[in-house]
Image (tube, rainbow, N blue to C red):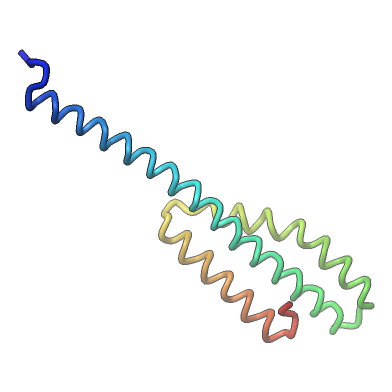
Amino acid sequence: MVVKDSVITDLNNRVKHTMAVYKWLYSICMVLHSIVICLLCYISSSQLVNITGTVLFHLGMAWTDAVVVASMTGFIYLPVILMWAFSRGNTLLTWVKVICFTGITLVTAWLAGALV
């Protein structure tokens, strides 16, 4: 029989409290994870749009047409990158791959002269 204000009741209350805190902390971390991954994917997408416009211009397309085509491809790049990023099962692998992809697009845009 468990008596009110006994050691066992106190331990049960502490466990319930810490589990609630961990669930709350986990929820906050997952929301922050999603926001940061979306921002990194947006940066990657914008750099891919810059690279596309620069490459099309250097291939001989008029500057205005290259900008319009690159802007339209941005509507394809972002959803594809987001689906790729969130299809990963492991959170650590998601971070590593998305950060590496963002770095690669930034370096490629810098090399192409499209970094804004």
